[in-house]
Amino acid sequence: IDLSGNELSVDKRREVDEAVRHLAEALRLHSAVRFIDLRQNNLGDEGMRAMARLIRHRGDIGMNLRHNAMSDGVAREIADAIYANPSCTQPVLRYLATVKKRLGEKTTGGEERLFGYLTHIGIHRSYQSRWDGPGRVRAWWRPLLISVYSAGTQQILRKFHKEEVNLVPFLVWRVGD
Image 1 (cartoon, rainbow, N blue to C red):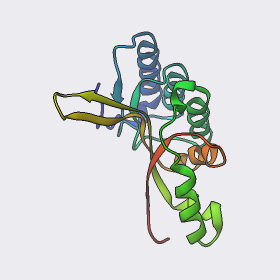
Image 2 (image 1 turned 180 degrees about the horizontal axis):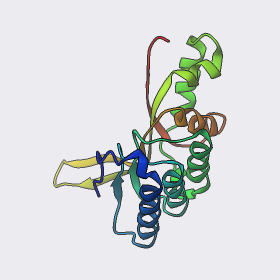
Image 3 (image 1 turned 30 degrees about the vertical axis):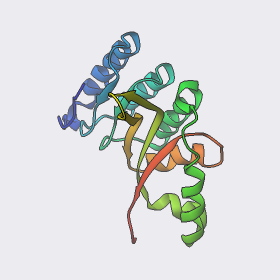
């Protein structure tokens, strides 16, 4: 479901969050929907909490939450939801520790400084493949959480960087101050 780019009014955030709560509940009950794109909708904390609850109950749904408002507390809730759902931590690759080690060692100020540079995170779960005929196998990563933008990224990464969790984060960081 693509509901992206609506840039819903910040003045009506309460109504938007209420609508997202209903949407999340419907998606929790109806597993046919596999992906929802909610980027650029000015979702607030309540709407994002609804998405965290959805992740906690349904690890098989992918979502894009880029460019929405999110406090550090809600980012922690999303990280906890990903961490708590067993289907969100299926073995994929041990990539996060490598990224942290390589960048953290090169970044003055260590871990805190490293997390300060990160602006996006995409967590993908479960590698899938499909046979498309002789000699052709199609493979892709199934998204769990495509992108979170803002300080929320830091909270999500803090949840996982000390653990041996098999998630594949794709990171984009800004260079400079």
